[in-house]
Amino acid sequence: MSMRSPGGSCLRSAGHNPEKGDVSLVCFDDLDWMQFVAQGITAIAQPAHLIGATAAELL
Image 1: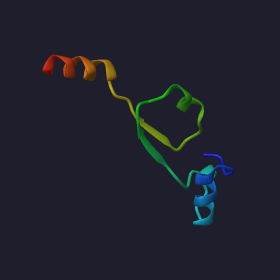
Image 2: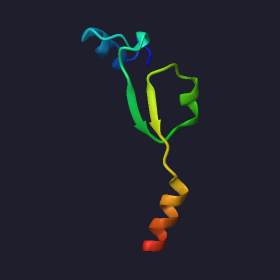
Image 3: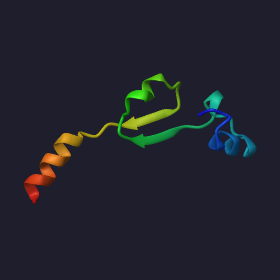
Image 4: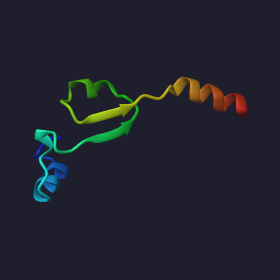
């Protein structure tokens, strides 16, 4: 997270420093751009195609 972003500014004012690994983020869907971000993002990859196919079968 960039310290220039509103989230980074808010964290900095609360005494945290995302650039030093002081903050972590957990999210769903492992997006392509996340591989370029340094440590701190944990992504839970979901099998979207399988979820959709199962939902369609249940309908």
